[in-house]
Amino acid sequence: MKAVAVFGSTGSIGVQTLNVVRRFPDEYRVVALAAGNNTSLLKEQEAEFAPKYISSTAAYSSSDAKVFTGENGAERLAEETDADIYVMAISGLAALSPLMKIIGKGKRVGLANKESIVCAGELVLSAAARSGAEIIPVDSEHSAIFQCLQLGRQDVKKIILTASGGPFYVCHSTDLSEITPEMAVKHPTWNMGAKISVDSATMVNKGLEIIEAARLFGVNEVEYVIHPESVIHSMVEFKDNSTAALMSYPNMELAIQYALTYPERRDNGGVRAFDFSRPLTFIKPDETRFPAPAIARECLRIGGTAPAIYSIADEVAVGLFLSRRIKFTDICGIISEALSINEIERDITEESLKTLRTEISHYFRSKYTA
Ligand code: NDP
Ligand code: MG
Image (tube, rainbow, N blue to C red):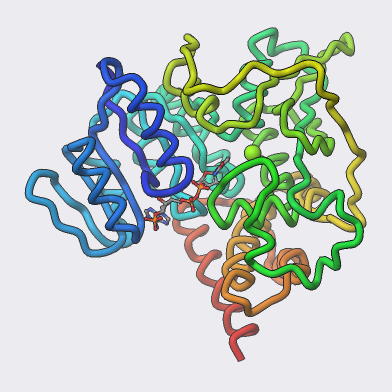
């Protein structure tokens, strides 16, 4: 029986992680749950899974579990919990501090959060190398690459990420400046949390994933192609121009389950095998209309805090967009402005990233809250 700790249990990935655990009651038991503000769902999860430890950013009480509350509740939960597998599905840079505590334990981490790798890849990966923690990516593209790389790591030429393009890519008549939060959070192929849905619509997500892939797999050549069906999750091109691809109908539970069961595979919760009578399409990226991946590639080239500024400025901008203070098309402008006004630093620590987040957040929140 493996003990599982789920960080971000009330979110899209967290809920799907619990679906996977539920399918294998003799193999996995939940020992810890970390949530944000959704205490009513957390209560239901506690009643069902009876974890020993719980954290919540909001006030929460329990007669059975030890509870940590407040902004650093998840970090304290990470310190206290002794699990075999940790799933990190807290969104945004808030995941970094608990993740560093988890990594220090030297266990398996199913990593869904991408912002921590983008902002602090070196910190996270060097801590994992020291502790022996095994990071298994949950992001569908990176899970696919992780699986394709099992054909041979040393002969990789490049990684090719696929991108659905989100709701607006192929619809050229959409005036991007008129897109509302309600339109942006409706993704055509995936059902995800609000922030990553907006990131998919702006293509900032693909930029984050280019940096995430380069960091996680140590490969600098990372390209992407638009593939609206989201059936091929990503590809690895080898030196002899052979390309490996991982395919399935889009379902995050497959990637989550693989992170738990790796190196084994199990039955899934009903995802059908691909029907080959359907066509698959690929479209060349349009970086004039959707410049975010090109900005991310430039951040990767610059290095230092450039990727962190990209990620943090986006997190702030998406918050402003969801609260209707800026337009959809302002998001990329805010990222570019943040990159031009913040000096690139070479030293990255958890503390320096927190300061950077406070500064960027303060600057743009005051600018757009007139
Ligand atoms: P959601 O917004 O659905 O969920 C986020 C989770 O994190 C919620 O449980 C939320 O709690 C919790 N949370 C937020 N802030 C804090 C905090 N300060 N401390 C503790 N918990 C906090 O996001 P997703 O599940 O969509 O995404 C999670 C991560 O996984 C992101 O980094 C995303 O990029 C990545 N990812 C997601 C995919 C998807 O399909 N959804 C695919 C690939 C990657 P509450 O709701 O209770 O406030
Ligand atoms: Mg992804």
